[in-house]
Amino acid sequence: MGKPLFHEIMEKPASSTIIAICSFIWYYIQKKNISYSDVGLSYDTAMEGQYWRIITSSFSHISILHLVFNMSALWSLGVIEQLKSIGLGVEFYLQYTIVLVVLSGLLVLAFYHLLIHKVKLEHYKRVTAVGYSCVVFGWMTILAAKQPSTKLNLFGVLSLPISFAPFESLIFTSIIVPQASFIGHLSGIIVGYAVAWGLIHGMNNYWAVSMLGWIVLIFVWSLKKSGKIELGFIEIEPVTESVGLVANRSSRSLQMEELPLRVAQV
Image (cartoon, rainbow, N blue to C red; front, side, top):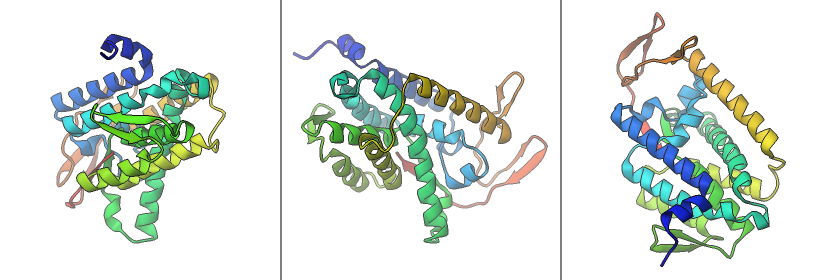
């Protein structure tokens, strides 16, 4: 018989909290009928100064299956919180979750930039990434590098050798889920190896709190700049479908091109 759920939650406090946050955000998005295009990350919206989407895209999901798949994988990776003896643990998990969220999002945009301007694949301007699996792939990679003998259990039925799991999962999800973001998952793997190999290091509670503070400031500033909130009493504007509509915001009209949007689940 396995451990009681409450006991497992106590052993994985950070993972459990993130799962609760993502679940609440999914519920809120569904209840308010918010489109993925309003919270997801795309090259065009980032170039317009909507940097807040790096955060909202990570914690948003477009369907219950998308949410369940990512959160199940994240729950399995919660074992990282119990491995303080090899330099991981709860503090490491929280500190580098911030790093993975921000850097994987920035790396996705860097890949989009190269594909758009160097390879001339213009449709990547409108590909919208949504989901937490950039971070999931990052943690999977870190665990694979730090403790390669570990087995990763998914859904209680699929067990993968963790040393091969990042690239196995990358190929597997790309085949069975056509909308899965190969670039997003690859970005998570790259940042994960950078952390595991010590290329990104030195995070502690001071730097984590400082980085979180800057993220909050940039998040609010970019919301203000993009016209999403009015500072003073922080009122978020109603969200509407943007494609093919004329939206009047802050006395300016924005005509969106009637071009198809693509969503990439991450």
